[in-house]
Image (tube, rainbow, N blue to C red):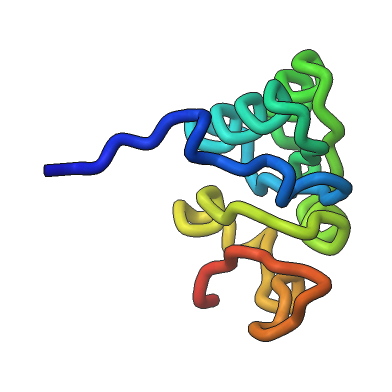
Amino acid sequence: MARMYYDSDANLDLLNGKTVAIIGYGSQGHAHALNLKDSGVNVIVGLYEGSRSVAKAEAEGLTVKPVADAAKTGRLGDDSAARRGAKNHLQSSHCSKSGTRQRAAVCPRL
């Protein structure tokens, strides 16, 4: 049987003072970004130049940056968009090296 997780199971203190970068603002990215923002986490969204999602994310009060800048600024990240085809906008150099404590990014194998 699957285990159910609730708000009381999460410790948001682990994210205090950190910025989470969400790359992409599609169905997954906007849900992650807005949930984290509503929970008091500092969130930035990385989008490619000319993305139609820039206006949507900014209308929700989110900070939008180019993908490379978001990946560098964010201490934690989500790569959902990269797995679905944004590889031209997110390169492995934007992702943290494994083992670094300064930045932890979830990045695809590019």
